[in-house]
Length: 133
Image (tube, rainbow, N blue to C red; front, side):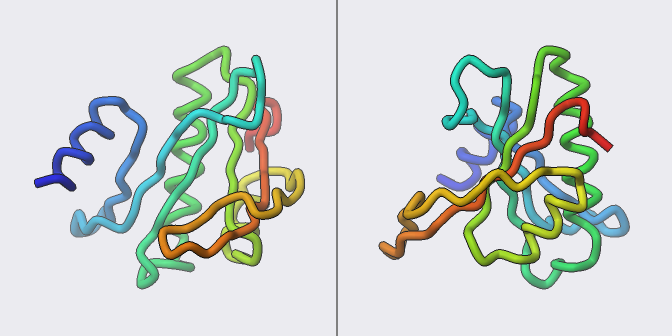
């Protein structure tokens, strides 16, 4: 029940897009849009995403992220950029973001403490409206 409530809240706030496979409607993952806490007085959003491991490297996330980012820019004409942060060492996500036109901005050391207490570094990426492919 708690998970259903969280999903309903995300849908109502329009802060999450769930990724379904076209052929059979299988739930593959999601894309979340949040505040960009690293920028001040700049119209930006920060995205995060998740895809089930069994669906990785099949092009689903590239297609979904590309469409979601275009829709985000179209829905907000004042939006200047979209940012993304991924754990350092996540080469697949790094390649994905670069293939979508994002620019690597640097690494924020000891940026996130995970649920198991591990501290992770984050790589920061951005895509300006004019860089949209």
